[in-house]
Length: 345
Ligand SMILES: *Cc1c(COP(=O)(O)O)cnc(C)c1O
Image (tube, rainbow, N blue to C red; front, side, top):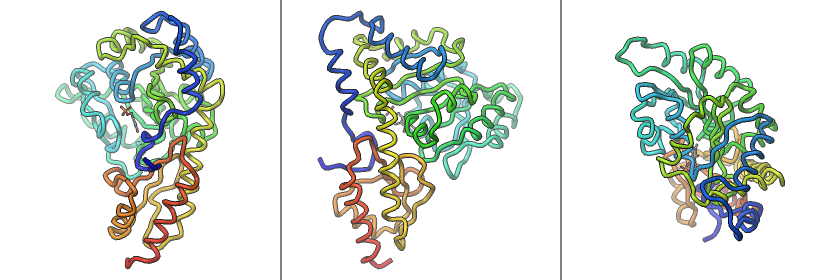
């Protein structure tokens, strides 16, 4: 199948992750995370984040988010996020399921970002026994709409959380793209800005699969290993989930992959931003570009074989992965130009 830009999950495994898998392929190692690959990768996280955080490896983002939130909540608690948050719209109720009923409370958001005002409004609207008790705020960095919270924005949200007695969870399915975009360190983006728990995505960063859950407040990680096991997320041959991380960090591939993906999104947006009837819906800050375009242009693109979704963020979404090929990005842009300049608007 030729390259498409409907999702960053269409891409394969990057060479660095593949090499690490190959290196771990033979020989015997202890199962269930008691092996050297796993401890090496957990240490690599601690080094990258410049702190002694607790690190767990799970298969995917839904599990990472759901189990992290479940560990922060009792069943009578609530989680505050935006109406476009992956935990609300794309996890099939897993956060509620794994927390035995914690309720997700959404704030309407036009750009996918949560604000202190929205958190405060939801967290303080009721204090009575009949209302689920607010306990956690969850933000996505970068957002599902391709926006990045600045460090100041994250710090402001964290201050609001601490004032209201809430923990701050970050869904970092594309965390590397946010680091590349802000050119800041992982530590600055997270615990130094007040984030308590991070889910760091490996899959969209170029690994075969796997996400890491990092607890900066280590007391929140109590018994988390049991949650992982009970949820079917404790890999017996853990080395294959764990090994790629250390090498991704040592070689810098995690950041190089993210930079390439972000640059591909910018290349695409720049190639089409002046076209009549095609509107880049928000600033391109990570690896996503959302376009508003009329039906005729959309139909033309589909007829030319391009895939894209229109149910996220109110426009046509194009995502660029670690392996985005410039000529294919340009081919898509050319087809949009052709449609926009030749079809009636
Ligand atoms: C991709 C993604 C996830 C993880 O999804 P899985 O399919 O469960 O791995 C989580 N959050 C966001 C914002 C995502 O885009």
